[in-house]
Image (cartoon, rainbow, N blue to C red; front, top):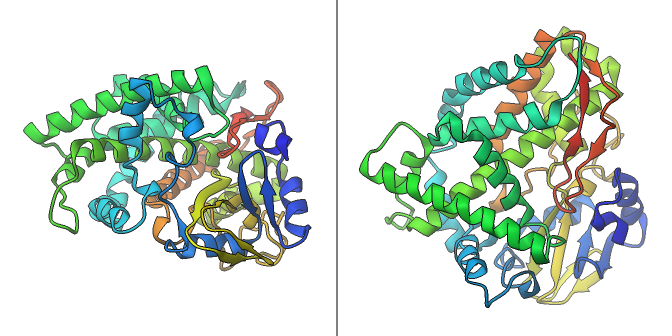
Length: 400
């Protein structure tokens, strides 16, 4: 299990399957200091009842990750502790309500031209017929460029946004500690400062962008988010959107290369791409583990989880649970009732899911239409990223 969370396993799914079939599928982990939940019904249960499985825990439950005597750590925690993903109602409800105008179907569709323009612009930089790694220069750049454009950030800030995004994402990994966490926090604070400048500017001079929308939207309580509250959510949008779409592109291409008949079928009928994207998300979830805390003694599996215990819901494991999905390890584009947990479940269902789906659909439609001869490359060697919570792809060589 230490190898699983240390990131050494390139393919964690056999280990997840083994854990599902041992006992009740719920296991204590000394490494993660909590219970691992690997079956679909139990993972969904964890997301269904915030009164029983609380989200109000992340930063105050792991004091060893941060130094209370460090001013940068305290400043970081002041912002990060206001994230609505780590809050229960009513705080969660109040903050999330500010997004009610931002991710409507109309808003998402209005962003489609932006996603299409950026996808074309970035993929056209690469030579045809030559081998290259699609992860660092395309898969990682698309979501950063899209969210930067939607937020109203100048194009020349994209490289910094990408650097900031990776640093902030690493602060959510409990295995990142010591000097490595210090560097990540320092870089994350640069992101907070920049977003604070944008928020202040939009209050004086509103624009047609997402920051202005969030600045002007009242919460359900009739007030506006405070500056620190708002910049915390903006930083989260950048990180969550980046990680999800980057991983989706790498995973989707890898799955298609491993299933050439499916690749040919999608090339023949790109109208199937939305269903394919859902199956990519199910088979290789960007976020593998979701953290909660048992608020009361509660039954889970064949045991009772003591109040105060950390619970890790394994979304990636649950997505391949044979109790829920037939042929759980197979890529089945026509799969019906594909209610995977990659965006999790309940009140904390990912607010940015519609944007991630749009990005995935546009990217794969463009690649399938424009590059019918796309095939896997061999160098650099295909390798997963090693974040123990969000497992993406470090490399994905291709030939267009």
